[in-house]
Image 1 (cartoon, rainbow, N blue to C red):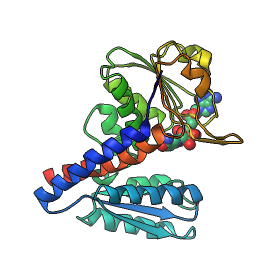
Image 2 (image 1 turned 45 degrees about the horizontal axis):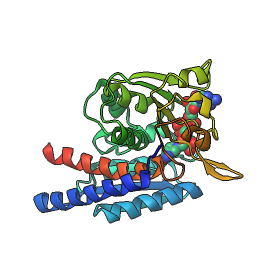
Image 3 (image 1 turned 180 degrees about the horizontal axis):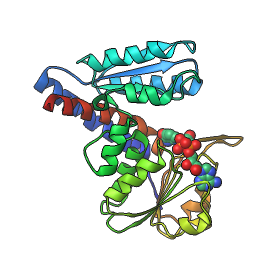
Image 4 (image 1 turned 120 degrees about the vertical axis):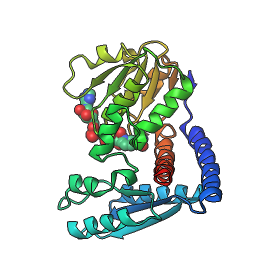
Length: 282
Ligand code: NAD
């Protein structure tokens, strides 16, 4: 069984991106800039944002975090986004989710200029991705896609099963696999016979949030299994896939932690650079 080392692949990707930033700086005399807006004191969000800034600096991007207290009003956040939209030194804007209840997530996402939407959540980017046009692609599914392609470069005609239909993971993952000519089944909490559906998959991507939901006898021999889940349990952090059991049948499997997680941040940096490149082409 191939243990898909997301840490290693992400480190390689960061090295490539570092070189690319260096080349862009030589060519345009400026570097891509990423601004992250963090609202409130949610501990995981604070850790994610710190890691994003650290990785951005490592590859040579200009990065900035704008922090607001939980009590900030919606207008202040929207006005800041409008200001950042106009700032030519900023290629990418990300508002860390979740947001406090009094701030409308949809309004915030739609306020970000689609060209600077490094999360790929703006409806324009969602539409472009589903139409097969150039767009920002949500970072976690993009990371999963790159890991799958490392194992199997030609996905033509493969059967893929995506477990979970969130806007963040399941839906964009489905689009990426479709684009690669997979036959995709998207499953969710109301799916009948989830085990039977999973058993058909040459590729399974699990993005659910239920510890070890996908069992060994749900997986076809030699399937590629990508585990997006991050679940805190008594025995520590586990994914949505029963690792031990599935590792006995799968051809390749991502561990949790150390699989998809590291790819997410590397893909955010990649998206920021892509936004910059599209902006200088205009
Ligand atoms: P979500 O809660 O938005 O969506 C979960 C999806 O799972 C829903 O579509 C739901 O229909 C489906 N679901 C729920 N119960 C199910 C069941 N019993 N059978 C089949 N489907 C079921 O979650 P999300 O934001 O997509 O996140 C999913 C997991 O991925 C979480 O554990 C989250 O922490 C993790 N995550 C990891 C990364 C990363 O970088 N590795 C990034 C984002 C999210």
